[in-house]
Length: 543
Image (cartoon, rainbow, N blue to C red):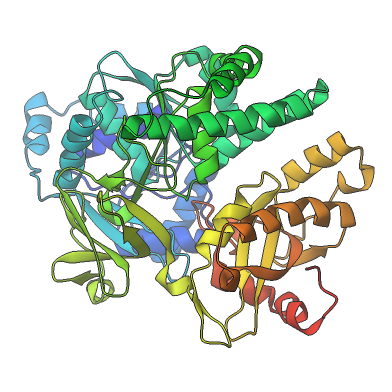
């Protein structure tokens, strides 16, 4: 199935399972070489496309792979080759035959082959069983009774090719919840007001955008300083709420209560209404969530439950629990799951959600140890069993002084700034750490307009996959604040001494990012090698 998120995606998914087929999702943004590789590796025989454009890409993929398939059918109307035509083909199949097919699957049967994003290597096909999905549905529903409840509703706007979106859909369907599908994530905010969800699964970038939009709206009304105080108060209130849940405090100080009540009337209540007025919880995953951003939303009255999982764990592996949310932590292991750390600090997992293995046997050689899946992530467990992530093992930097650094922490702090799309720490074998800060063009353009800086509103993005350095003093000053704040939160030896601002084409087609928009650090850093070299050769670089 290759399509943006939509109802027909879910329909095709369920129908294929009912007929006894294995579903292979392909991201709608995938290029022909990726499509061909997946069709070949998974031995796909029939495809469903969202549009005629996707259908053409799949047909070309079949041709390149030398596969004689059973056709490509579209969700959009296409005479003789759409879902309506496919339904007519099966009109003569008796219900008993369909039921016989449905009963072929058991818990150990492969339900889907999901290809990993591949930030450091070629995508691998993860074999996820019906039992993996069933186990996650039962355990998530049991753990999150306040969130997963009959009569609730949500909006799915994450790519359906991602296992998180499909798992979420199954959880909702199994518990009597309504689902709306949204193809364009940019339509989320108006959809929230119209559909009034009771909970929403998001990525941190969405939360950053909401916060930045609120700040921009306040600034336009000349309430920028008032909003800044409201934002600080929300974070402070969120911190108090966590302490209250933990039983360490009983009542907030009078001053905090007064400020929170004032700002609730001015800002917070309006924001809650903007997102529908019924939103009880936000669930965040797929990327690290800044602790202060989590506390900010808690202070608004919109608590964020951060979790952690991978394709290979059928999404949720750990999660914070309602009433026990800890900002900066990804929570405790889900029911039916065991998490432990290796001697090197790698997160290892075993349980109902852990996949059956990769499709290619060679890919399984280093995937497991003593029955535990090796996630490739570094983590720490506290006394309460809560997991905190510290980055990827493959991303670790060893400086010239022999200091081992995990760049993800600094990068996460800097990426909390709405002007920043990605941050990359560099410094392997170097005397100090440097930073490549990739700008978010849309956010920078909006910021430049607010600041009255006309020459930054039309920044040109290079279309060759490379990066161009931005040396505007005003932008350097603005981003410098984020870098300074990030450095203040970590040890001196982990701080970035010099950084540069870059503008790059962050699309999947040029190979800089994965289908899930994760930066391919190695590939991008190599393309920007001359910039990295100048960062260390030029003593006048921005510090």
